[in-house]
Length: 289
Image (cartoon, rainbow, N blue to C red; front, side):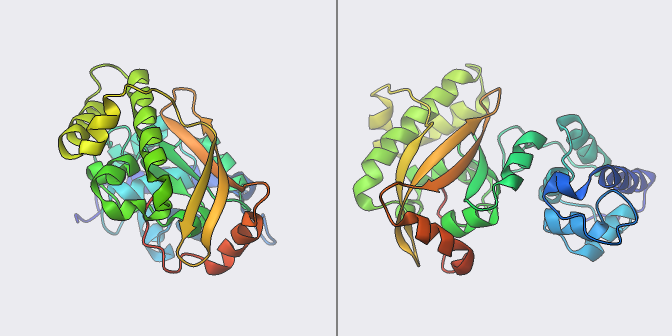
């Protein structure tokens, strides 16, 4: 990576500092704590929220160190609750191209991040309309696996569902046909909401039609339905079968959804979900939603 000694990188550091100082700890779910000399976040708190080392973040604010990656910029934008315009400006200062909408580095609305931060006792995550996971809380990682490492077409769980057999381990085999139908109907609904010339969704559909006979057969049925409220059976590698309700909150443009999982009534899932915090991410390879 390039060094960060230019005037622009000094501006990047100043911009990060200005955004950090305007945020109260309560805005991002952190306790105010004693002996806080300034109302904003501490540097170590931003580093923690962004998944960066404190030393690395300190270097960024100094305008030194290495050029941040697109993924790190996205993480910083979320940690600092930047607006879409502020996020784009941060990419500009870091001399990185703004990623296309719908990728794993997509901007997440600060309001959705705020809601996600308040869902501390239940698994929750924000995904795009093409099922690209943008951000997860710790319990979602424990339940579903870490989704942060997928790039390109593989970032979409729908793409992986029809192209990678391991992606289906999250659901019992008896439920695979139902899930396939639901994913295809949801994808058609997402395509209908987008512009007819949208290259992202059109490329995804074309690829799946070409490589998956199952997808092609289901696509020919022309079912259209967003996934709103589902009852799911999930297979956890340590805890076994967990039956949950999956609830969705859609963004105004429909491009993003906040998902959260609650125990299904009449099952022992409440106790199993309570154990997620103890089990953590043990043995989970990240199969997706």
